[in-house]
Every structure is written in C-alpha cells, then in structure tokens.
Length: 252
Ligand code: GLP
Image (cartoon, rainbow, N blue to C red; front, top):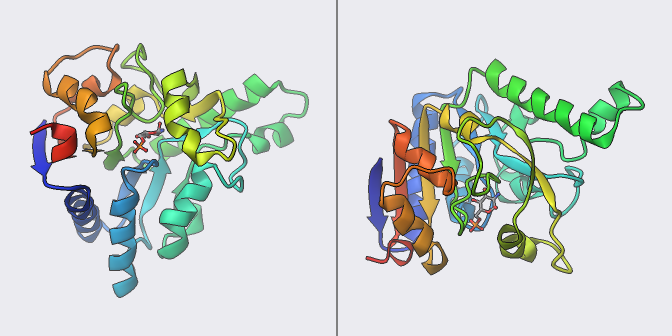
C-alpha cells in the first residue's frame, strides 16, 4: 500500500483528479469504480473543470458506482444517482448507457417478474449489477472514501472479505454520518453495495480520506491489521492501492 500525506483537502482533491484524468488519457475506455460522500466532491469538481476545457474526456469511459440506498429511485434528490448527476455526470461527456449504479427500487425486476417479493427483486438487481461489472471486464480503477468505522462503500464492520454486491443494513453510525443528505435527517435503513470481494478485484484502488473525523480509521488502517472487523483493512492485501490522506486525517 502506498501512502501519500498531503497538506489539505484541496491538495488531496487535485492529486486524485489528476490520477483519474491521466488514467483516462492512458486508457480512454477505462472501467471506473466511483464513490459518493463529501470526500470525493473536490475531486469531481476538478475533473469537471478539466473536462470542460477539453473534449472527449469521458466519452468511452464506463462507470460503476459503489452503492445506492434501497427504496430510493434514481430521481430521488437524496439518491446517489442524483448526487452523481449533480457532482459529475451532469457536467461531462459520459454516455448515459455507460453509467451504472445499483437501482435501489429494482423497478425493472418487478416489471419483468410480476408477483415477486421486494427481497427477490433486490436480489435480482444485485445479480444484474455484478453481472454488468463482469461483462465490462471488471473494474480497472476504483476510488474509495472511508467511513469513520472503517467501512468502504456500505460494507460495515463484520463483512466477510469475499462478499459480492448485495443488500446490507446500515449501522446507526453510518446512518448518522449520512443524515445530512436527507431533509429531516432520516436515512434509509438499507442499501445495495458492491461487496468487499467485488471491490478488491479492481486492478487499482485509490482511497481518499480527509479531516479529523477520519483520523482513528486512518491510524487503524496504517497499523497493518487485516480483519473483517475493519472492512478497509482488506486493502492491506491488495497489490495496487494508493492512499491519499490529508494531514488532518493522518494526524501528522
Ligand atoms: C458513505 C458512502 C461511502 C463513503 C462514506 C464516507 O457511507 N457509502 O462510500 O466513503 O460515506 O463519506 P464521506 O466522504 O462523506 O465522509
């Protein structure tokens, strides 16, 4: 694992944006894994600014988001689909058919299989998503944020390392941390997330962490521990991971 401690959130965002853009320059049909949350907002803003300057930035890129809330349609203002439109997809030349997020309502499954249960429809959606990643030839470069309890995507502590895309129940601490995105502060209880197994198959992974609230998780990751109690620790086993962490998160 390569560590890079930078001075500020702004520097972390610029370094991350440059990694993303140079990967696209090198591989125009890149298959990207993308996160949501506060952490990548600065990276997305820089990518948008750069892509506005040039043409053909994302025109052949395929994207797969890490997760989505169960019960929210892609048009729900608090969905990760809306987040991605607001911060990235609405401003770049990515093709609609190359954008992939789990569908938190699994609407297509109900249409195709009338009478199935909610749980069955979500299960089909998880299978469809895994299959879509496999058909794209698997993830080439994946960006991750870091939950305060060490979660990556929505893989909470205790998640086995070999998990695939599935429905998960969110921990109270994760719901509290994400409540700011929901008017009234009520976060959904469940989400569809790529599994730790799915994520760790990405050829390269960049983890971003910023701010004091991530310091404990960053220091645990630095300890070299490898345990499902701390989901991000799976990255200690991956051969191509780069961590870009600002001083506040690193505690240096
Ligand atoms: C959510 C997302 C994660 C993200 C985490 C940290 O739980 N599902 O993918 O990494 O929040 O978010 P933030 O960057 O806002 O601290």
